[in-house]
Image (cartoon, rainbow, N blue to C red):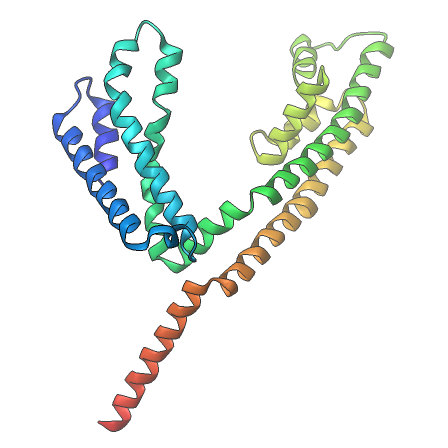
Length: 262
């Protein structure tokens, strides 16, 4: 709530508020004190137990928060003189958003989702590679069709705007990849692209239709299934979540026994 109020105040007001600044110092000091206590209490075990990744994440947040405080005074001086450096110095402010992720450890389902996202970066990389490969293959076919159409056509399109739109969307390989990515993600209706490609021929329209069917019903569903299966396996192997389930089952059994005794 404090983060939301601070961002809203910075968006609607040009004058910074000292209240938010002092509250920022207060919370950062509390987080720092928490980390110092953990270091003295657990020492080397802090980064060797089951919560070592969360502990390292907390330490990263504290360091970024202090970096934000230290360079906050320099950003105002750099504004108007060196905007690029000023933007780079604002990067540690991402720690304000990262603090919200600290609450994930206290909720089982949310923790599984956050861990799934963090551990799926490698799988996500290969998914991006596969999707880009599919985009590249279909873009090659479409770009070749459009290029051959313009070279072999004896007359230009009657509608100059339609010709310009065809060139803008499929005039080069990179433009075709961008257009197909829009059609796949819903950035633009694929039917519009089919109408643009209609003068080229039925083969170009068929390529777009095949691309949509292949990506929508095959690739996307397979990728979703892989991530869902990974989340299920992770939830089964999550030790903290298993302990919470056992404690919940134990409390239910204890309640039933009390009802029988009464």
